Image 1: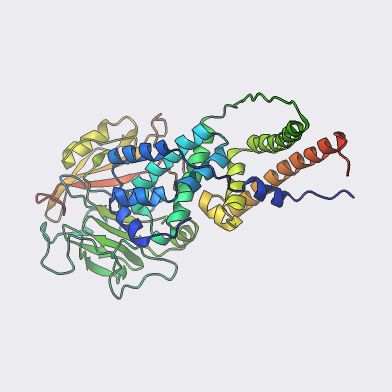
Image 2 (image 1 turned 90 degrees about the vertical axis):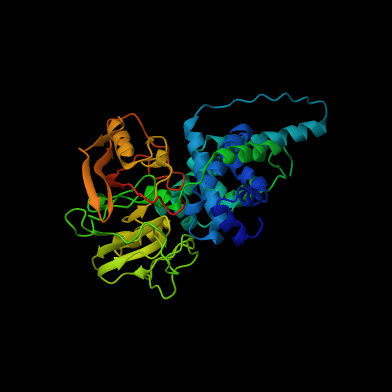
Length: 186
Length: 279
């Protein structure tokens, strides 16, 4: 993530669209990654990111400290992702055809199965819980900062982290059991 | 041995950067959309963040129209509109501090409560001594009767903000960077957002805006009252979102605890014969 160009932020706050797009261009991949990890769907992540950036442009004059631009922008995006997730609770089922014709492919299939189990477990979490995990483990924020960012009490964040941890642990243990059943030798 | 899986390690691995880049059309769409999206004046966003309690509702006001809006200062301990001492002049003052270009820094020597960090785009006078105070940059220049304990956080050509130094404001500022209680005067040149985005108002004069508020089925309004504040005339009306209305404001992404419904308050809309600072 590039260092915040304070002058660029101030220019954007005063209505300079070119400055705003320069700021966004330098961060868009990272922001897209955040949205994808919370929403677990590329199309919905694109929609949420676009909406968040338009809202950010609209509300940028309210940003008190230009040095906190990145934190503020991530907060706008995270809350927009949660809103999008609440807006559309439908489950998406994606089918994938895999051709298994050799041992290497079977190994790959096994690995993808493990990954998918964790991904599936992750998708079953509420958007608010996924957001907390992304903020904690992808962006590295402390729980207190996450609480401030999402506007909820610290206890709620700890509760969401605890629940998400338990869910993920269950998925990992399921992986371990599946590996054991598969008869892999030590 | 039944070793407990290290969830944190797995999560960090799971979230490791995968080199995925945003499609080009994301930026294209954003660029196209912001060309049509005006920015909100800071005062409008600040108002959205403010929790308007019953004590301060009568104080909240917006001015209006062609282009001046002066907030109602009845809340400053005055029984009606006598808190505003009248426009000094609708034209920019020759005084070097009465500039139409907002200062980017707080005024020199301004003292603020130790829990408050002034906005980088403001030029507030800080803690105000009780008594008569005159705006320095806001146009039209106005004189206010200010009780003890109030702070001027912003004084620019189109916005003048005040808040009381209270535990509620201190707590809210620590939590969100916003204020629980504040009031302001502002220039309204985009009336569609007077109440909130999504519940618009129309008009370019105080009377037209009030008519629009009264006709808005999403609002409960009082009987409008003609007022005179200083040299300016206009209309005062109570306007609150109707709790039974199906209309709503979009959620505020900056403050997800709020559902978008907002209280409003007593609105003083004043016509400015000379126009606002941008005219």
